[in-house]
Image (tube, rainbow over all chains, first blue to last red; front, side, top):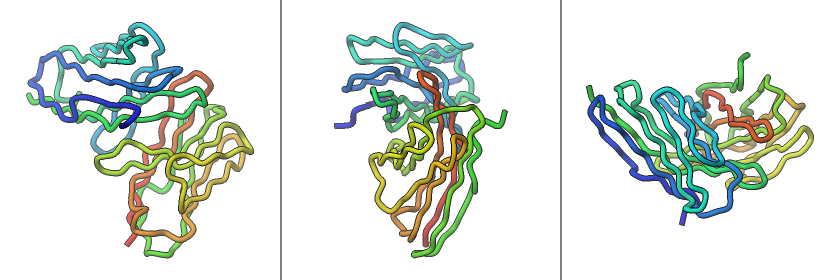
Length: 108
Length: 111
């Protein structure tokens, strides 16, 4: 069983919809990361969080440490949000362990 | 700031050839990483370096060697490339308790 599981694997939404991507993990962590990978391949870190909630523009990330679960929300989705969203966790030694990613496609 | 600079962007090798992927960061980060990304799989750690002068194996180290030349640079070497090493490679760096920064990736094909 993977230490980091994401759902769904693929997600298609209409422009303007509210989107939720989920991440569950099975190991002790010091932090959880949400990353974005656009077609063309570059990876950008969106959030790093160890408790509570963070917001940046239309993106919101939450984490529940007791449940070992995190969600990434996108409000008022736009075609430019189309990308692969990757959840990763940092274990005590500092290495990142990645989920397989959620491919999001937002249709105009 | 350039962030993490990774070269080359693309490379085609013949089986048995060798090559070195270069990575440099200008953020004074202690930790640097090499990952590979294959279809249907998450990024997998090849090697990492927690500080200058130290390196450790990750999940998939076989067929690779690394060198942490100084705090800025962390190179990945394929001594004898195999088709199974066809992948997209990412270098990353991270400061203590900070988010990770990634290079643009190297798309390597071994024929």
